[in-house]
Image (cartoon, rainbow, N blue to C red):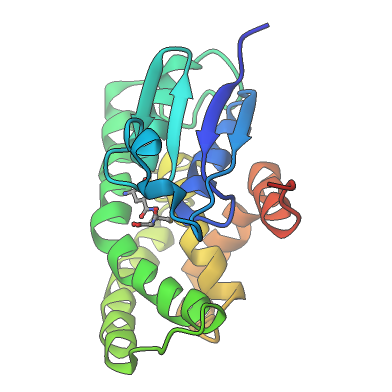
Length: 221
Ligand SMILES: N[C@@H](CCC(=O)N[C@@H](CS)C(=O)NCC(=O)O)C(=O)O
C-alpha cells in the first residue's frame, strides 16, 4: 500500500481544506499533521524548511515537499490521475486550460476580497480583533463584481469550466463555506440564482461534506 501523503495545518484553514477536498475527491490516503498556529509553530525554523512563507498548508508526498494549495491540488491530480475522480483536472489540454483559467480567476479575483471578508467577518470576532468596516465595505463591493461575472458564466454552463465539477469549482468551496455559514453576508450568494444553484451542487459532494465534518469535529491535536 502507498505511504499516505502528509498535510500540515489545521482543518479550519481555508487553504488546508482546499487540499483536503482534493485528496478526498481523488481517494488519496492522507495523514493530517497539526500545526499550532496560535503558538506560532508555522513560523518556526523546522516548519519554514517545508513552507518558507510560514503559512499552512505544507504538503509531503514521499520525498516531495510542496506549498500553495492550488499547486498542491494540481500535483495530486497529475500524480494520482488513475484513481478517484478522473475528471477533476480535465483529460486534455483544452479542458486543463479552461480549469486553470478558472483556478486563476479564483486565486486572483475571487479569493482576495473573499478571504478578507472571511477574516474580518468570521475570524476577527472569534479572535476578539476589531473589525475594519471600511475594509469590509470595499471588499464586499469587489466581491459583488466578481460574483456578477460568475452569475453570467454559471447561466451558460453548469460548472465554471464546463459541464463537469473540477478543481476550479473545488477551489471556491472553503471561502464560500465561511461566508455563507459564518457571517451575515449569505445574500451575496443567495441573491444570484445561478451562483446559488452552483453552490448547492458543489457543496453537496461527499468530499466537501467530509471536510466540513472534519472542521466541526477535528481530531485531537
Ligand atoms: N496562497 C496560499 C495561502 C496560504 C494561507 O494564506 N494560509 C493561511 C491560513 S488559511 C496562513 O497560513 N496564515 C498565517 C500567516 O500568513 O501567517 C495557499 O493557497 O496555500
